[in-house]
Length: 314
Image 1 (cartoon, rainbow, N blue to C red):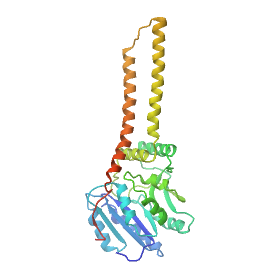
Image 2 (cartoon, rainbow, N blue to C red; image 1 turned 60 degrees about the horizontal axis):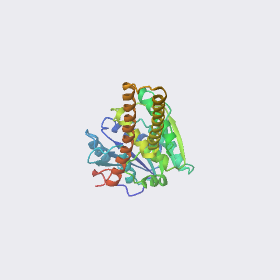
Image 3 (cartoon, rainbow, N blue to C red; image 1 turned 120 degrees about the vertical axis):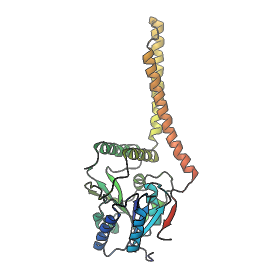
Image 4 (cartoon, rainbow, N blue to C red; image 1 turned 90 degrees about the vertical axis):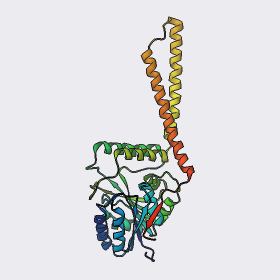
């Protein structure tokens, strides 16, 4: 373990990344050589990987004294891995990035100089293109960013990545948020601080395959919306009010038609359609309420976000 406080800590969550870890470390070594005036520590967090990720982390730790590792007892998710790395970080500045090299380490020197100048507390990155990404995923991602910006206090820039370098002040502010249901992109925005954005073209993984399916990304986006906005609850309330008004108007129409013209109340199919529609709205609203209730339930249990079974610190 290094005794001197490093200038920069780089936090890297890892889940089944055996194919890319050595490539990532080699590229990071190249960038560190260009930043000879800055000292580094690299915290690699094994998020319960099922492959040879952990043995490779141990190998990198033995070969490079700047490398530290943490290993979870099981897969707790990327958010937990990010939090564990931030809590273990000792650097004056803290960077967060992925191991797959889709976050270009070549940006680190300029990002560091930006924050070191004192004019910014955070140097963050965003993709300006989604080349190579499935079309449906790109469309949903853009819709999500616009929706989040419109209904929440967290202004998330379109294409924003977790890859960023932050001052210790901003890092400590993020760590002060103790919520169980974490959505880092929203947290970065919510805490504020002066941020400069670095843009880059989308790049493919250097090796291995993505761990995020469309379903996982969809659930993650729902977590983000419910974590930083109560607008879905307002929508459920408005839907209930509107349906009550529509039902009242329809009752008046039926009564008037029956009294004035003696029209029978006809239309079994239309009646069933209305019943199913209203029932669907009710179930949808109950689902929204249930989602918020579930998050409250998880918060009150006060369970740890992760369990570490092994680390380079002993």
